Length: 478
Image (cartoon, rainbow, N blue to C red; front, side, top):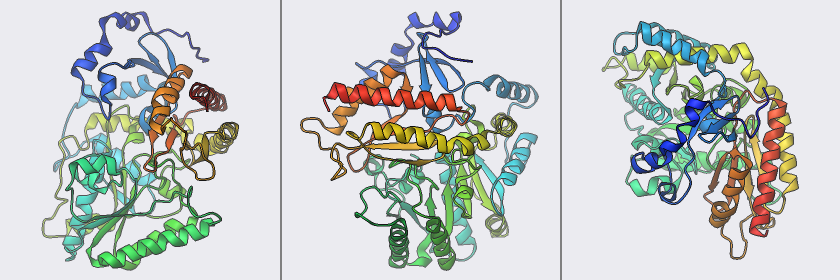
């Protein structure tokens, strides 16, 4: 179905507009990472329905969702009724039961399905409610594994600079994003950070192989400096989201990380909260880049975010070691871990993804998406310094000085450009994406759309970006 800018919401929802939902939210709802201006002077969008790759506000205006909600609505917005039928049936049969020494069909069957999709011997699944909880669980599982083996000195974790792993205490400690964590320090003891894989701004002429060698040498040096017998795990996203779609420089990068972990007895955790369930054109990003982690953390795409769900997929070796230890169980629990309704939604989501060939669609169309967005970058070299990414996860890094690779506009800071020019241009174009100022002071524009995009959708996404960049530069006089 072709969607148009003047498509209206159903009458029953359209009548909600006069009720002042935005003002109600501003008065009573505390929103995620939302600046004070959205509670006061700025317009607050109210979205009331979705279809395919688009969402509609209460006034009937259509927006192309170039961020898939928050890197998570794999199926787009068309399959809610089918997933909802599975949810309704599960609510009618068994609305809730724990997985505390009992189980139920959705949790057991979903764990089996995830194990079938996961690489290698990752056959054991612990369920949580979201990505932060999943990384918290992985921290505790790694610690308990080493303690059980008599290596209780292994309490440290290595993560990468600018990486985001959540906002709960342990997960936030893993974060390499200074602005997210510094207000709440001191955090969990013993987290160290190494360089990420961003190549933009690396020394001129450095090859991908040389970047790989530098990164692995630095990581090994950090391991030696800290003492290998003090390190529990290294956690990395296959494609790092924060910092802007950062991919491994060569296939040897993750192979090298894996080898260092094996040499020094360190666990390797792949944070696949974003890359899991098809975003890069494989079921898991670790498979996509050809490495075998000891654990995978997941959330978002497992149920296309139609229901909140996350978890940890661990190797048989880790779980059997813990079960054979003195505690005799994984010493961690969550009331909603393995919630039957969420698991039923996830089972239906995976069924639809397989039936519709969603992961195959990403693999097939990823080159086309990359080519179309590269054309956009080439049309706006006045403000776009780098375009990068993989699969259905791409980023533009904006600069005004191509030589220094920095935002250096006289009288116009990066923040002012984003707030006064770029964000309004994106809103006018009807495009939702992620816009942020990165750790180095440059604006980032990220797109990570639903995995059901067609070539027509990709053409539209590229056109909307082109229009927004043109309008923003014209408005700013760049």
